[in-house]
Image 1: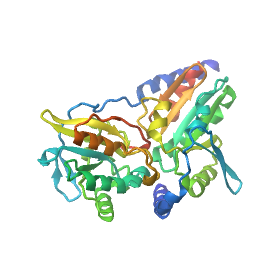
Image 2: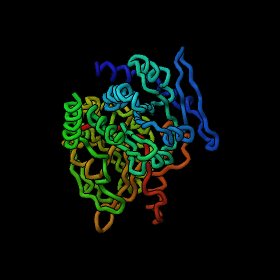
Image 3: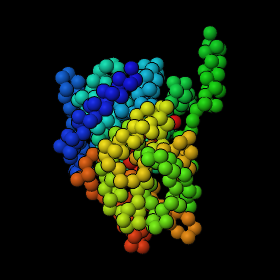
Image 4: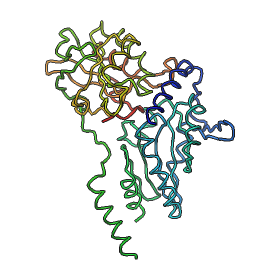
Length: 181
Length: 204
């Protein structure tokens, strides 16, 4: 099953490679906070540049936010997604919200990301971050982040922790419990 | 009923304190460190070390692989770097840090294939046993390290990304690696010694 995905991906990726240049989204205007809703059938996908995305890192309400950076091409990310889904469900009534931030390539949103969200039936909020100038925004998320994914931020209005690692379910739950108490 | 729940939670917390991996610390080489040499197998079967390059002024080391989409997007730009800088004394050396058991697409045979398809002009080395990338503190592919040969040894001068736009080479505003090598070649201080970029985690 795993290999099927690799093969499908390789095919998709190779076939789309030449299209990359024409699919570039303009990210020149830094001042303007851009949010575009991409429609593919009935599915909407919120796409943000970093300025637009920042609001998800600075919420000051009574919730705990679990922000996971992932991509469909990242095998360890895909492996841990069910744990985030489980947390979102199990801790929903304790004011914990999971937000899955996809770093998939924009030209694969329709062919790869949206079908993935649908197939896996992801219940957590999924948004896409598309900002090519990574050296500008990566250090703003955490100064120690080298840029590898998966990476996760767990925060509430009092505290914030950053993890550049894969989680087990227990390991993730453990961090949630620590911040809840 | 409450006690067992609490106990099991405590037990889980206890167990996890052993297994929970802390966020990756900056344990590898830092700017200014002298690196130790390596001896790694190239796709042609020969062993390659930094000391083989008698005439080099330094090196553009890239930890890269076949399977990471970011690495693939940068392949042409890595080839261009070698074409531009090898003759000036800064050859590219590519090292695949991934464990082929975890990532079959990064096996020795697949590396040979990819290098041939793309026409790599530089060595593409296997980090067999994954001993080299942790020394550098490489965490992802692609991850660049520029070394300068000095009387003390090969000194780390730059760590990070190739440029500021992975999607499209024509939209790049800052060529971090080129700027760094140009600065080294002209004897100037490198302006941006470290940069960050998203990449695929190294498969262990």
